[in-house]
Length: 352
Image 1 (cartoon, rainbow, N blue to C red):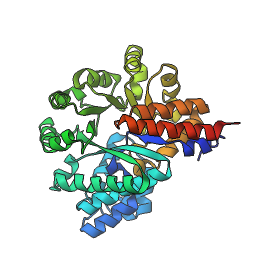
Image 2: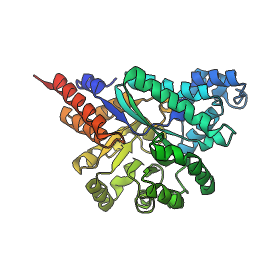
Image 3: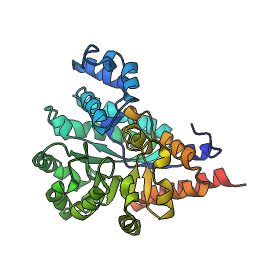
């Protein structure tokens, strides 16, 4: 909870989340439960004291030293996901928390290669996540979209196989688009150009992680080579004035993840992020939680952290929220409905 008098407004804002990895919402308690249920042996506490208990693991999550340090635990956690019900339970745990934080539209990532490499069928993963999405829509009125991500530390040829398996779901709209995640340094995005060109020919939405641990040149390359519609993380955009102006002019959405950037030591604190610069230069951005179970920060926590760091006005929060709505991959009718809710919320919290 932030200390600002605007906190009630931040709670009430109808939020759209665009950058959240479902596998990154795996809480230690659910991890231990699923591992026990599925007979998965987690590392022993002798080998890694973090696995002595869910609380010990949560404490270790507070001390990541880098993106790769985080990914080490991230992929261990995935090993417990085996059955369709596991994937549904994972996504549902996130949707429950997101709903409590005021999320009304969620576009969430998932990493099928991390599961099919363990011989978990692609259909098991997607069907489980789709069930949770349908439940969130039915019980919370939350609109949802699934975005398939390719793991950049794996060969491009394996990503091509995954794209082939998912092509029908992407064309049919069961999946909303493709993305690119995992280790960034040393894996420039242009290597995936052939797959992204195929997706472009099929009018499939495209995004990619760029400018988190990698240099600003990766953002430029992703825009030029992959022709992405959205930039994930992308805070290093502020280092290139020409590129920043181009992104602002094209109204490309940058999906910032403030607390994640701090936890992974990309920046020392939220104040170092270019929130003010993006606002002043008209860069479209949304605020997101990335891997909330690992970073102890869901979307409202990120909103509060930004408010504590930048003391934004109510009007600026309305602008940020509206930008996130307009940058979503949902029908125009849904955007209009959420914008109407935003108007009502803003009036209720600012009318004198």
